[in-house]
Structures are given as C-alpha cells and as structure tokens.
Length: 265
Image 1 (tube, rainbow, N blue to C red):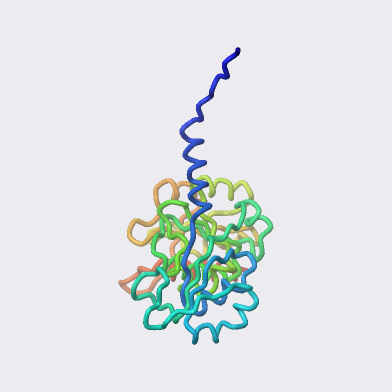
Image 2 (image 1 turned 90 degrees about the vertical axis):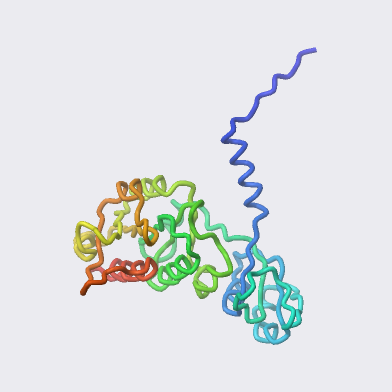
C-alpha cells in the first residue's frame, strides 16, 4: 500500500492562517450614544451585543429598532459592559465586529469621495487616529490607511473621537505601509509627506498637481516619518508656521493638509 507523503506548510502560511482565525474572532466594544447610534444604523457593521440603561435605550429607540437587536437593560449604577473604567459611555455600549472595507485598490480607485487618501505611519494614539478619520470624512477623502501593527486599532475610544466617522470613513490597516505606498503610486497617486523639516511648503508641493490623486503621509508625533516611509514619498513638505513654536499635533496637521489638498486650484 502506497504511503501518502505529507507536505508541511511553510511557517509564513501557518502564521497567516492563524492571524486570519484570530481576526475572525476579534470584537470591539463601542461606547457612547453617538458612536453606538451610528454603528446601530450602519448595515455594514456586524452587531453582537448591546448593553444600555433604560434612559439610553429610550434615546436610541429608533436606531435599536432599525438594527433589529435585542438590548440588555443595565442598572446605571452597575454598568456591566467590559469597557475601561472611566469611559464616558453615557449608558450605551455595543460589542461589534471590526469593519472590513475591502482591498486598498478598490477603495483608492473607485471609492466614494475625492481621489485623496491619508496614510498614518505608526500613529498609535486612538484619539489622534479618530480625529484624523473625522477630518478625512469632512474633507471627502477616500480612506485613511495605517499599518496593521503599530497603529491605532478600532477601539471604543477611537470611535468616540471619530464622532461617527469610523462607520462611514474607510480605515484600512495594511500589512506593510511602504508596500501600500508603492501600490498607490502605481495607481497614479502622488505621495506628499508632511514633516517639520520638509523641503517645500505644502502649498508649493500641491501646486501644479491639478486633479491628480494625492496621498498625504504623516508620522507619529516625536519619531515622525520612518526612513523607509520618507524615501517612498514623492516629496516631503512642511506646513509653514509663524513664531518660535512650530509644532502641530498630527491630527491637526492632517486637517490642515486635507483642507489644502481638497481645495487646491
């Protein structure tokens, strides 16, 4: 009888399959009336469990009915949702699956909004990432892109800061940011890095690009853009400032950059 020869899977295949299994089980707890309401009415969002006080349930009644989910009514003095102590939950918390926005190419080429994206290089603070998502939605960007590791994941704090934008603004977390940048350049995007020691003012970097797709690339406060990220940009620009203090929070810098890119002549 012939013996079947077993083939051992390469380590990278095993790791990838394990990561997919973990990702499939991953859940997020959103909190706060605004974040929970927006998630309830988002048909893309898989909703698992809703915990609300009677007061919050009354305020969210329409959204709860639309979502078709049965809420668990909690005592406001003993709010049992597994969220960080001190979170401003306003009596509402919901367990959900992370959103899947699909492939980078599909969103960047044919997504809603202007041909404009934001890339965040190791921005790990959920409040900063949430604020960037909010600005990206306001200025009509197609996506906010960040590396899967060493970036802010979907959390309740990020969703609350994003003020609903997390449900509507694609937030793509990619395996390798530099590879994603190369892919965007192949699609015709011009990548404009923002850094305090940039070679040219932002307005000058954007001048003459016309309607060409633009990717704004921002690094974490302190470390800034990593070498590989900087090298992959087409140009490194700066936001001009007056006075001796010239440092902007990354989310503020993103808002300024998005405005400049969205309104360029």
